[in-house]
Each structure stands twice: as structure tokens, then as C-alpha cells.
Image (cartoon, rainbow, N blue to C red; front, side, top):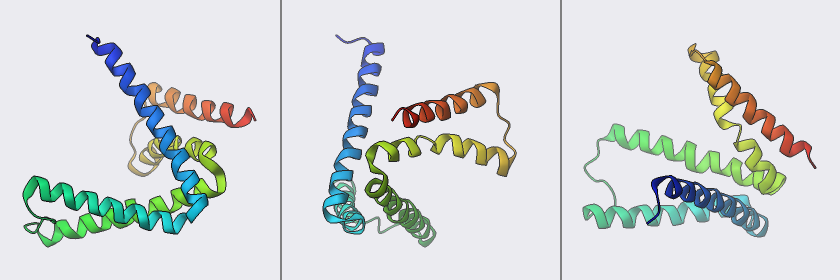
Length: 146
């Protein structure tokens, strides 16, 4: 039997491998069919999978009992998160490639931390500062190595 520590490490490695594989696959796909076509195709496929999952779990294709405000927030979230953000991601994959795009997306937690500090006055401890500097340093090391 696998210990919990080893199982966690294996899960982390599998996640990293799948993440890298998806970046590579999307880079190849975006160069073959284009960013906009890929984004539309992915959105259609995701919608079908979500509807099928909802049908299996609840017996309906869509949540008919949801209030209009929930539909509004769900729609806004989908448009911003899935349509707009992923359109930018696919364009970055096309122009920068998987390697550089993954390096830029690794900055998201650092930028979020800085924005939370600047916009909301959140306090940063030494752990957050050192971790952010470590991420930025690692990215500079990887990008500067070529």
C-alpha cells in the first residue's frame, strides 16, 4: 500500500505532467486551427460535458430552478473566465509558446498578492514576500537560461 506522503507526491507529479501536457496539446491545436476556433470548440465541448453531467446528477440539462441573479453571476463568470480569459491564453500560446506562457501564468499568484496588498490593504508577512520573490526569481532563472 502507498503511504499518504507518497500518494500526495504522486498526485503532485501527475498534476504537473497533465498540466504540461495540456499546455503542449493546446499549443499544437492553436497553431493548427487558430485561437478563436479552438476557444469556440473547447467552449462547445465543455458545455456539452457540463449539460451531460447535470443531466446525470439532477435529471435536467440545465438548472431550471436557479434564480435569475444566480444565472446572471454564472453567465458573467463564464464570459469572463472561460471566453475572454481563455481567448487571451490561447493567443499567448500561439505567440509565446507553451514554455513562455506557462512562465507568465506562474506569476498569477504573485500579481494577485500584490494587487490584494495595493487594493485592499492586505498585510504581507515575510513568508508571502519570500515566496513571491522565489517565484519571480525562478521564472527569471528559467527564462534567462536560454
